[in-house]
Length: 275
Ligand SMILES: [Zn+2]
Ligand SMILES: [Zn+2]
Image (cartoon, rainbow, N blue to C red; front, side, top):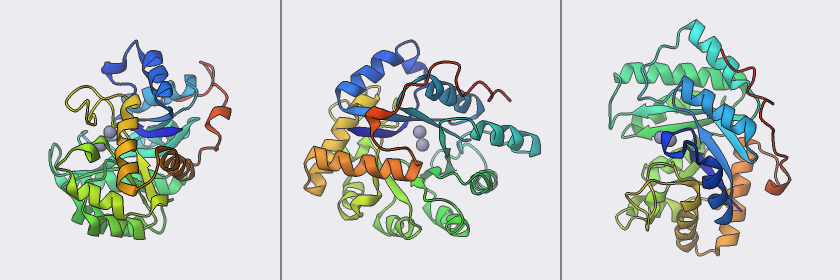
């Protein structure tokens, strides 16, 4: 069984058809999904989806694209949301110097505030880092010995950057981009990284793998990413699935045996998160 460690299940693309999307995922052996928040509202929705859906968990965090207003009041709201049931990480948070939608000093300050919160709550972090790896590594080295093992989502660095992150004890999450013929740098990282530090993700509805490149992505398509990674590693799909799912359970501290997770009925959990 595969785990999609990064999907945005609250996005409009999935509205009204989430059951069907998750059924297709299960039919493609993608039996578990982590739904990722990018701001307060989407984080709240991710928590709500996780609270009513078996085998779905949530992260909460403010993406570097979002205007950062993390004063004491806002941080108290985030702290409360992060304490909700089935929240497994702070994220996605980070630095995005590619889109540069917020001033870079604000992005760094916003990231630090959220890393302080992750340290305080002892939660791993899901990082979004784009064209900002040197600044990220400088900042991350301040936190590496205090944060629980964390995740570089949609890893886009080179092998030297990967090595630094691996030295921190962190995990590299591989997106559908790995199926693109020009993704040689990522394919190299995937070949060289220790198998016990690799995760798989869709980033749905974005970044669909070949043969769906350019179309809306969904968790079921994780299978194509997994097949490519298995090929790069010289493994069969089952062995790759076992390893990456075990890694995901370890970093997100989710109990093993995916089939044994009891469904959570609506109303349980998530009810106390409205800040
Ligand atoms: Zn991202
Ligand atoms: Zn994302």
